[in-house]
Amino acid sequence: MGRRSGMSAFLGASRIILGNPMFRAFLRLGLNSATCSLIDGGSVAKPGTLIHYSLLELEGVPLQCSLTARFFINFFNSIIKFSVRLLGGNIDDVKDALNVPGIRRGIETVLKGIALYGVTIPQMLPAPFMIVWDFTNMCNLRCKHCYRAAGKPLPNELTLYEKLKLVEELDRTGVAAIALSGGEPTIHPDYLTIVKALAKREFYVATATNGWRFADIDELKKAIDAGLNYVEVSVDSAHPRRHDDFRGVEGSWNRAVKALENAVKLGLSHAMAVTITKYNFGEVEDILNLAESIGVKRVVFFNFVPAGRGKDIIDLDLDPFEREELMRRLYREMKKRKIEIYTTAPEYGRVVIQMSRGKEVAPTHFVARGDLVTTAIAEFIGGCGAGRIYAAILPEGTVTPCVFLPIPVGNIREKPFAEIWSKNPLLNAFRNKDNLKGFCRKCPYRNVCGGCRARAYGYFGDPLEVDPGCIYNYSAWRRLKESTIREREATAHTIKPKITTAT
Image (cartoon, rainbow, N blue to C red; front, side):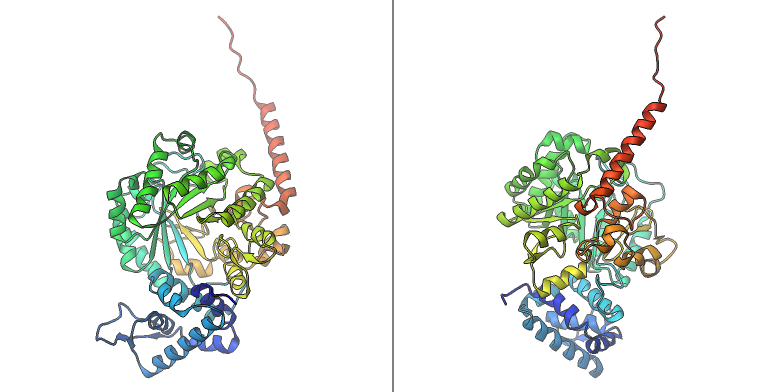
């Protein structure tokens, strides 16, 4: 067995070994709270669980604890070290990864999920890995596909005080990463204040942006100094005029590209984000060439979802065979390029397995060599993560399963986020793929795909319906198109033409 990432072996060990009933009983002890201190006399930032302290010491932080806590920490870390080596991983890679607070928080959430719920497919978690926080509805562009139809700020957006209280609440819940989106978060006056607050509490802090503000390198430096870990800049064409037309403001392409150049120059982790439609379907190679010319390390191709202003351009959505061609093209491009290529289309998991004849899987919308470990990770992620591994919070505090899925499941002004996450019926329905309908329910690839729940809702008004973008659901796509044509014809017949009479 070849050497693999220490973290992939760690996750595999968590599901394969710690999921064993005997080890799970031990792992449940790790949910108990404890208080440890640094051996040099310092104090740890805040009290935590035994699992929390075990991961800290595994990272290399020397701790002074009670005898009971010491027994758990030593035994737990012995199991982890043995398991990682057994599965071909490198324990030093694990230590390096745990040194990143956001990763450590995420791993703690996984372990708590296994302790509470056992090994489930996909894995149930006590908190989402990531919250996409639509920070504001304010935006300086007018993108044709915007799921929020962003423009002016909403009158009832969270106040700065409420935002800071939300940061504290998400910290207590155990969320690992926060992605600030919008609208355009970087132009809001509270942006840097919230980035600082998130970084202080050791969240992994990301921002999705149109790049306008960060085209000024000093503005990007301010965000990095505040604690920004990752930036994702939207570019929807390799050609300036086409991008500007799609984004609604002249000069937006130049500023987006400049923002990416600045991220590369400053060494900030970054990605180019591309929403694929018929508008830019033929530009995949040109877009990847552009990214490589800038020095971009990662390109993320987003599924088009008919939400917000996207409903007005629904005819630009790829049909199932075009989407299949896209994913196969991305797989081939990934094999021949050094750049990382991701897609949010959950069907990519199936395509990768089929094209590699089972030798590779796509556990988190990118490709990894397939074996016992990566297969376990792929099933852990389970395709579309809406309501399972991530959720969204809107500018006024409304919680939804995904930013592209506008079904309110609660509001943080009325209920704690942890209560919404654990008790909402729709979120719980997403965590059991037996609740899916049509072919998505019986598909042999449902554990690595399951279809996009936002697209199901956008087309059928039912988030548990089939995703019509998959070739296995082509009949559903065809019915949708036929009904749309009939509706247009009926509408056309009821419209009386205006006749102007000359006078």
